Length: 349
Image (cartoon, rainbow, N blue to C red; front, top):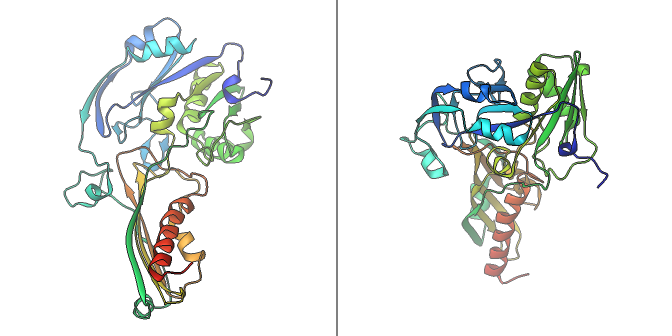
């Protein structure tokens, strides 16, 4: 019990943050009233789209506290109080008038012309990432057997034993952050950039971490929010996610759809491989290590004729983020399943 994790930080005068999160997968905030929460005894700060500094997040057109919410769990407001219990009480006093908007949760719906836009401008997908070598059509013409299948993998949530979170404290113009992170330098760089600070004014400490699996490679909103409130109040501020927030807002491995064609000669020699890959991207790209599903197809087996196409699809779900060997697990499931089917069809090992 002597190892200290981010949640174990207890500094004199420490405040605790709780977040109000969107109950809708897509909605616009018509009005937000935090007056009752601010007046509650023990509350020291409330941040929302009404008073937060102009800091972009996720992508350039998005704010730290956006008025348009794009997934269930998106941050609407936060409260900093003397205890976690007071902070939770204050959240129930915040009044929000939401305008629910159309939303899309699956690939096929997102690709339909009539699908509601995820972002202003209606962008539903990233540009395809295409890789080619050899002559795929000729390779399939040379094949004695062709496997043509669609494989899917589900969304997976990291659910590390230790959730995301930090404690932030300013001493003069120096910011110290005790963070649960896999990337102390990445967090320092991103926090400094968001707050307009020289990097040497930000110190990130991580003694121990209870799991991350890729989801803790980057700075998340809670770190900058804790730093903002600490600067505003002059007190150390702890903002740890609860398990519900972990599942909604701390990233996931996006589900995939993979249409794979695999051609081979009678002796099992591969002649051609063609795969179309669709990855659920969630509402935002968060940075860090992206899921490269197509990479395994390109490198694992010798095949002279190949074409891979990978497209990220935006949905009204929490953002996708790196998840241990990002992309390789999804690709290996599909490719190895196809290889097994090919071997059975050819009656070889």
